[in-house]
Image: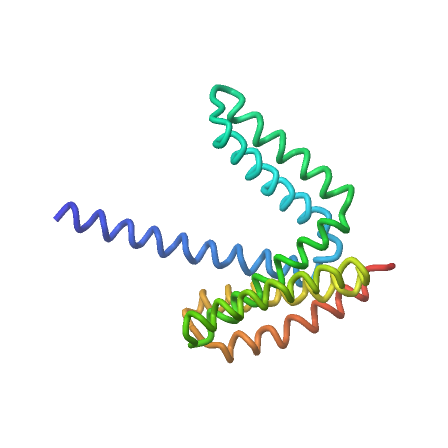
Length: 194
């Protein structure tokens, strides 16, 4: 019986943690949706840090390094790429546009009931479309960044709210996005300057 009560307690804690993570998702979504343009360099630095840390960890694994080097190298690489991302933010904006677009298409494709081959084809097309969006973000930085951040933030708000409400409804997600995205775009255009 102790085993079953332990599983029950674990399930309750996991459910509470799940709701907490969904609330955090909604909060970050709102931050992106309404303040994305202002937060861009911060997010690019965060992405650069994780990218550099991943590259550093890969180097540690491939070179079979040990001791303090296995901790210092990934953190140093992460710090360097975070600073580079902040300073050369249009390169980071390209990658952010590419990744967010690909992620958004992935979220939409997951909602569709299609065969795996078609899903892979759509994801590949989404990745290529993400590259195009990344190029547009660099060319028309301010409006593209505002739209991209509002859409990605609106998607995070919608998926988070649907998760909290425990409703797996594509229509509800679209309705939430239809309200949040235009509001986020208008707010960002009104509160930021060229």
